[in-house]
Image (tube, rainbow, N blue to C red; front, side, top):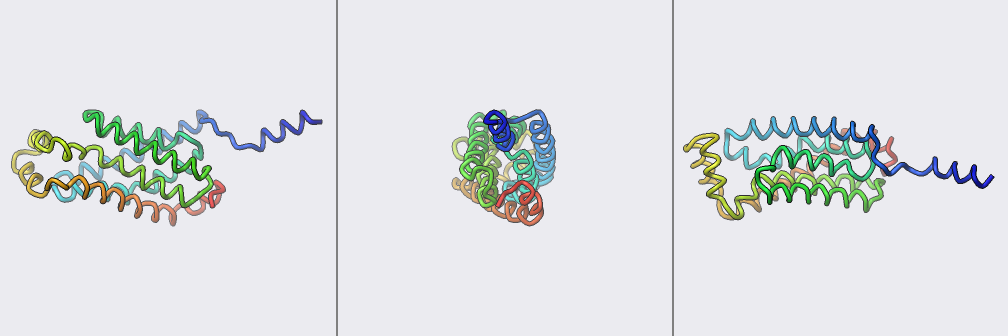
Length: 205
């Protein structure tokens, strides 16, 4: 009898391990997230001001995709997988940016874990941390702006690089970080409205 009770308790406990199905969900949503992010960044890169604002724009547009991913998987690892995919695609050539992107994903995972995957507020807050990964490609503004501008010349030409240099003072990285945080907040509020039923279905309050 006790053996049966133990088996019943085990079946009632949530499965905390990532399964193949979870990895498929995380990969699928990750692909959607990355495609949207690349469209936004590449589309705005021709206009320097819009390019600098891309962390805000990506946060607003992609917040719902992130939230669907972590709510659907509902286990430790979803945000980290998404963050690794982002880091590989966007910051692989800049090691500090790569590390920053991974740390942002880990911070998002910790926030979700603190809420035991049941707190809607912490789900929303986790995206604010996650969206900081968008500052990774801009991190060189802090320590090597000249190299960043030189790379811009090779991709978009001298005129575009000069225009970008003219609107990027020494403190610009902190402004970009603020944009990422604001974008994360707005994206979270939009996601909260659009996927309310998904939160309820997952038992998130």
